[in-house]
View (cartoon, helix red, strand yellow):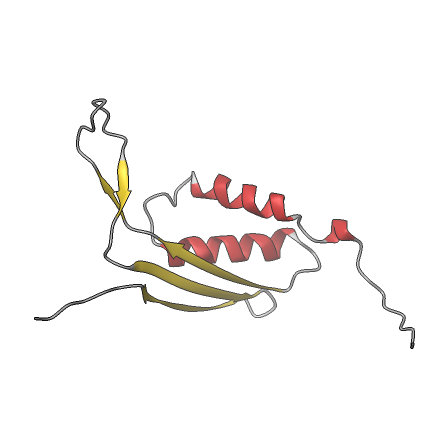
Length: 116
């Protein structure tokens, strides 16, 4: 059995998973709750590169599910939704911090069309 020496970065040099999740929630509650997922992905990618000294590039994958409001459910609430069936809006955002450049791809996923 061969032994290898690897220098591993300290875990504290990268953002923790919970920190990343909480950052997504916090930024999502600001200006991006009604904006495009592509723009939100750009903000997230740039944020993680800017706030993590060892991170030079970021790749963000986003999925937006369509939700439809159920008007006045049995309890009289207007805060009830069901997941629509018109496909999911997907986006991939790559950010290179050194070049300050984005590459964005977007489209639809799980869209079903019937022509009769």
